[in-house]
Amino acid sequence: MKLREIVLAGAIFLSGAVFSQDKLHFDVYSREEGFLNLLKSSFLRVSSKEVDFSFLFGIYSMSFKKINDSIYQEVVKDNWALREEFFDYSLEDSCYTLIRYSAKRGKPRQEKKALEERIFDKKYRVLPELFSNFKNGLLGDSLHFIVNGMPYSVKINSRENGESIIYSCNLGELIKREPGDNILFPYPIEVYAIKKNGELLPLGFSTEFLKVRSGKKVPIKGKLKEN
Image (cartoon, rainbow, N blue to C red; front, side, top):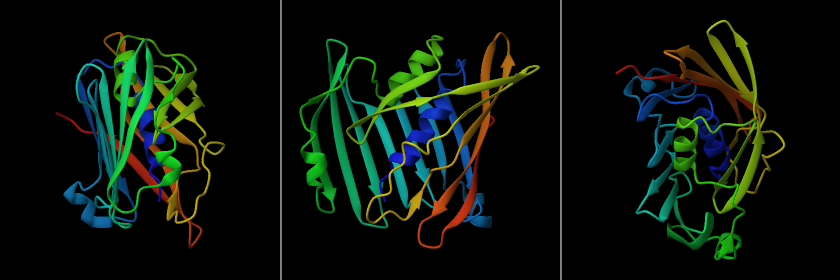
């Protein structure tokens, strides 16, 4: 499975608010993990320097970290397929370039290796940088970001009810099934937020994922962890 869909979902969580905290931690729950989820084996952590996401007992995970002032590294792990991939991006003149792709476990994908030296348009940002943009209130009706060496754009809708705001999007048009995929995230995502002290605070999210072989939909929810 490619973790593109999971990371796309993570980007939507970031779009849900103008953040008042330096780091946010979401506990993630799914029916597939049952009572074992009490171990908090699934989570999403976001800050201006890092995005860290682990899903389904840690079988699938990704991190996006700032290495220095101009280099970000994306690490994608699929322990089911025994694969660990690295994508290194450099920033120069406000544009990101995929400078290196490699695989520590599993066979490197030639289609990803072919993307090396690709320069992205200025509108596309890495996920931790989006956190900083949102914190400064630079949120429009679309997100433009880079995942697995590819650029993506997604429209965001919102509706208000008093102090509450629900953000939503549909990833269906972005999700392309590829050989070997075990789960997909083709369904709408909703993020719940409230107005607090003149700012917005995301409280949680909900969506579903699809088990490809059985065709079964499985609910998944995230909840902001209280300090």
